[in-house]
Picture 1 (cartoon, rainbow, N blue to C red):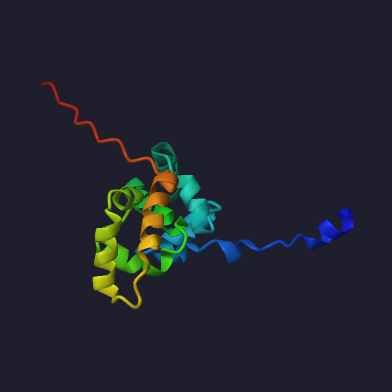
Picture 2: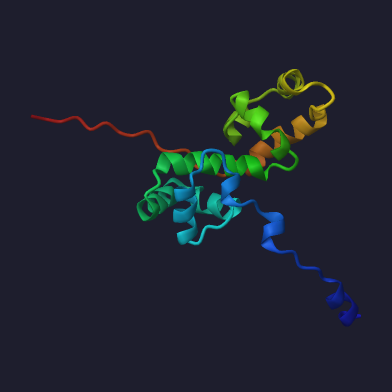
Length: 156
């Protein structure tokens, strides 16, 4: 029995599951090179290395990529984690939804209507898909927002 189960296990290469860094909108070849030099090869690794502000600051010092830019990439990575949404990401971004926080704030009916208007009813996702995406936005929202910068007053 153990021999049968052991032979039934199938392994999948990482490339089949994860997206490369080039999939991110606005990432330059130089950014990709710098991140790969730090061992970050795909979007899931980048998400886990940029979820917390302190990690973005540390990675920024090591790569020269600004923390704000890393935060933007982290938000894109979280949107890629939502099952079935990747095909519609360009349209969703045009509707102003660039983070899980923005997706979570959406009304499913309103978002579905906007997507149907932009894509056409035949190509639009189903209403239940849109509801699912919004529910996933709560579970997958792991990116810590940056703290507001404190302005220090100068005393003469």
